[in-house]
Image 1 (cartoon, rainbow, N blue to C red):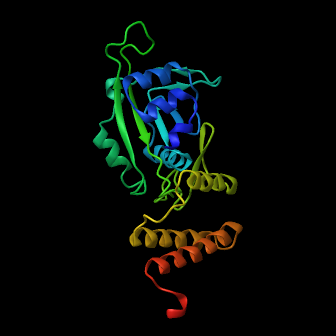
Image 2: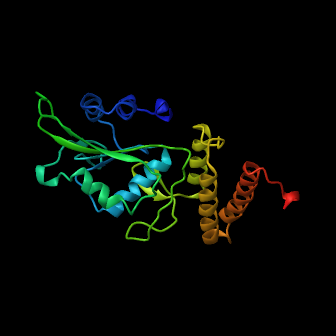
Image 3: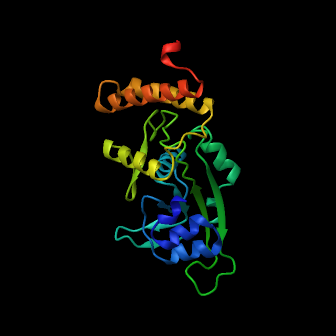
Length: 238
């Protein structure tokens, strides 16, 4: 599991087993934002939130905790959410449905510390977006052109920010995918391969005149050979 290698341990523990206890450990650990963790004082515009979700999903998975602020010096404020700031999970799903790729998996969990005593968490309510890492489908690309999102763009985390991936960041994403076992495509269905080929062609059309385009062209050739192999087809037979 990729989370086994995460630091700090409090973040790793929470992502492996989300609970009030592990979230308490994470929040009281005074951990600042990272590639795998983002804080929001309250819910933000959902195109901006989708950008963060895409970036975290591409960078290894993680979470966005809503109800926590981070100060300029890196310290955090456990403000929590008021009742009118809480958004129903179904409404969150409806707002994100058309902003994210269909294979990107996330869930929203509510954590209300009703019984917490003598703690800065006492009576506080937080909502947490937990974003899974699936090397099979990474990198995820934006599926819309809207506000913060550019269609076809690949976003990644850089410290406390979600940015459009540079060539260096893209290499990091691919290396993480390989190290996590994402390079093993033997369990892909033909439909998976064809959808990936289509995505590669779409990405290539946008970048065919630069270095990234040359790399995509080679990937297209390799993907076509993989499909031919899976179909028991060989070039000389065509």
